[in-house]
Length: 414
Image (tube, rainbow, N blue to C red; front, side, top):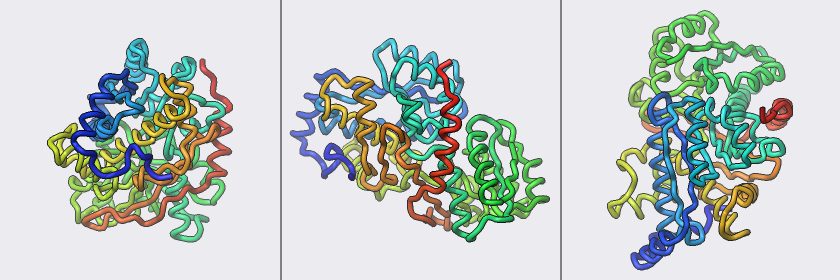
């Protein structure tokens, strides 16, 4: 199904909007706890994601919230430190929050046992444990959208489809030597064995500014492609090293954390041909983004500068929370108020072919599959814009699920 009726339509009239605000504001809110890195490693993305999420919440509240109850987003900083993330979780939990989002792989990994033990809801979209899509084990965790395992597998499928076979090819994996960067390695190792390509690993030490040794090795080894699990200025450093070492940027395939700011810092012309895997449609020509612009920004509202909306990370925030808010709507529709962790769980598991009107690939969540299908697409920078090179698709699902079950079966709350 497309976007729910609560998101559909043009602008509400001023009278209806005012009535909705009054009704929603008078009711107990549904709170979401966003324990994010606002000060250290992920500040290249968190402001845009928060702005997108807040804008969507405002739009929803103008249209009556969740059954007349307003959506409230509580945002606090964990500095990408697992212990601070757990402290943030416990602090919000004491205030009655039961839906949490950490947007950090190390923090998410650290928090899962506690969240699971308390039977709270944890959003884990686009970060965290790859095996957390196994809903039979991670009953309270919802990694809606492609995990890093799924994204990496889809990148390999793209290269395979482009060349017909991977047998005998050399594929490099350059990554920040840190849980985020290390996460795809196990699935890449499985696929290398399956498809007969040579996997070359190029770890880069934090903070990612010194990549000289890695790219010197790349020059010697000449891999056919470089898959990159880095972010922000690390892509700029990588582009400089590719130029210095004579490696074509058109063979650099990045994780989704590669945005328009990175392109500007590399140079639009210099970046021509670079590839990225992506999970959401960028730009403003998407129905829900246009509705936010018309309803909020063109009437003097919005939660930040309008130019931020040109960044794919803004759309990522809208995407993450469109799924969460739709799950809440389904929970309320089925079981009424109050929404609980259990009813929210069932709401997520009721998402069927949901795509937020084309913002991302359709997702269907079940009791056993909490990821929703794991589809991505590859885009290429053509010098002026990102151009899709594939349709939304998910490759190697049988392989991924074999690995998922292997690792999820080892999970314990301790």
